[in-house]
Each structure stands twice: as C-alpha cells, then as structure tokens.
Image: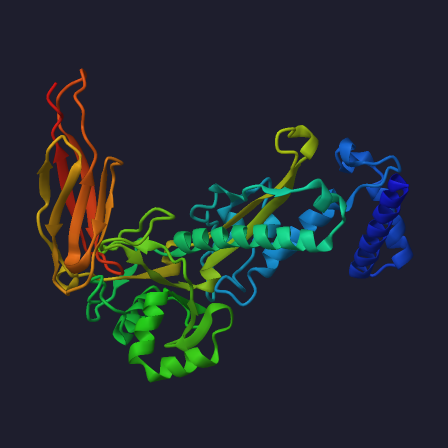
Length: 445
C-alpha cells in the first residue's frame, strides 16, 4: 500500500510539473504531462536508488526542475539592481570561458573614409580568454521525509537560500572587479570623529563626474554605486538628495544626481586611504573603508555560465543518514575597458580618531592572580578588552578599570622564557585601539 501511495504521489507531481512546462512553452497540457512522466521514468536522469518500483522519480531529486528553478532565481536577482541592464554576454560563453573580443570591445570608426581597402584593426586584448568565477554554495541537509514528501515549499526554501547566498557573492565579486584601481577620487569632507574617515561631499561627486568627462564617457548610462556611509553623508547635507532618497529606494536605487543613476550597496569593495584596492572580502579597519564607484554601463559586461545541482543520498551517509544538496554556478562581471569606471574612496585623518592611553607593557609573576590598570579615552567613551591567550582574561569595570586575571605559569624543562599575551583595548564603533603586552615569568623549579 505504501509503495502504491508513493507511486501515485510521484505520478501526480510529475503531472503537475508537465502542466507547468507545457504552459511555459505553449503546448497542450496533455503533451506536457506525458513528456514529464516519460522523462521521469528514464533512470539516466536520476540516481537508481531514488527510483521506486514503479520507475517514477521522486520530486525531491527531479534535477532538471531544481536546476531550472535555481537558474530562474539567479536571473531574477539582477532585476532593479545596479547590475540590471548591463550588456549580457552569456550567449558567447563556452565551457565557462569567455573571450574579451566576444564581449563587445569596440573598434575604431572611420568618418567619410575615402581610402580602400579599409585597414584591418586587431582589437586590443581580443585574444584573451577569461574563466568565469566559480561560486559554490555549502551543502544543505534534507531529511528523507522532507525529500520524499514532494514538498514544493522545501524546494522553494532551498532555492531561496542558495540563490540568495550565491547572488550576494556574485554582486560582491562584481563590485570588486568593476571598481577601478586606476581612476580614483578621494573624499574631502569633514572627518568622522569616530573613525577619521573624511565624509563625502557634493564636490566629490562632481570630481567623479569631471574624471569621467575627461575619459570621454557618454553622459547617458552612468551609474554611481554608493556605500551606506556615503549615502548617509549625502542625506546629512543635501535636502534634494534626501527627497529623492525617500521617494525611490526600491532594491537599492535611491536617486539621480549630476547625470548618475545612484544606487546604494552594502558590500562595496574596501580601499585604504592611499586609494589601494584591498583583496576581496577585506573588512573595514583602521584607514580602510568601503569605497563607492561610478561606471558606464555599456563599457561593463556580465556573463553567466553553467549551473549545476549536486545531490548525495542519505544511504551513503550511515552516520548522519541525511541527504545533502548544493549548487555550483559560474558568473563574471567586469570592465570591457580600463576607463569604464572611477572609484570614490575615503580620505582619512588619524587626528580625528579618539585615543586610548595607559600602560602598554605589564609584567606579572608566575603565580595566579589579578593585575589592575585604569585607561583613559580622549572622548570619555568606554573601552572593550580581548586577549589572544587563554591563560589571561581581561575584564573591564567602571571607569575603564581593566582587571587582567592570569593563570599560574609552572616550571618546564623546555625552558624558562616568559610567556606573552596581547590584550587589545578598543572603543566600540571607532577605529581606536591599544595593544597591551602582558609578560608572565615562569615559576622557578
């Protein structure tokens, strides 16, 4: 009875899938149903262990459907974002590799030419092949009960989670690639009293515009992707920008200013105060902050490659008895030419950053116990403390009194050198920090 019920459920699922596919391509639903049942009955499409006696595949591993849903999700991720409408070169991707000459590198144009034959021009960088970036999601466990219940909700949740995770990484990688390391403008506003970051001004945006004008970038199609800090800077100084921001914040697009379509993005690449781009994934710290960037849409391209679903069965995992599903997707977005973008990075002054003062070297005996020190901050703020050694635990009390609690350090034959712990004191929400070195002598034998 159980097998019969499973068979009927599987047939029903495949029928529903067939109707959906038939509607998408405009054929008779009956044809779609018969086609889905025929495909599902072919073992080559599915692992043999997930085929039941009736030969119909369970819905949880109908890979064409899962993969198709993921591809649709990833395509939808571009809509109304700063990558939406950028030339798509996916059609010329072969084996997840693309050639620069195929993405629309522009040749010179002759005006009123009278000389024939027309000269042959080898397009610069035309012979360079570029491998698309590979994005792989970590596997999600799905129980047998969830997998064989043929739950559309489960497919939707997995697709949503993996699609969002891959899209987030794609956008961060694209922003890092598009932001120019050559053409740059530094912010010049008043320094933030917590971080020393110079705030964005209207004049800074005009400087970016002037830079793009010098690069002969067409006026139509310019985009400016701002960090959250830069958006907040503009909201504080520009009533016009504030009005536009409040009217149009759908999916990150917030305004139009000086010929730029302006977007807000939370994962812009990090540049230091000299204008040097940091590696992908670098966190903000010290004089390193997220940078905004402007680009001309038609001098940038994106391309998607293959998308593949991976599935392992619970029967191959006797300890955990769980199925695992994840996805691999290929994608790239980058400039066609070096003059496609201008980066707007943050100027910096350390004079504005608050300071922490107090003892920076503390020597303690080999016995267990506590040592207390009081630290002062230039802005009166409270501090935090963390240790890089498990034998020393710092805690912060009232008035920034720090208690350094130590464990005993017994004698060992390997030597009698003191051990050292580094304690980092910091003011939350700022780049202020102070490293305190604690040295503990070894006990005498």
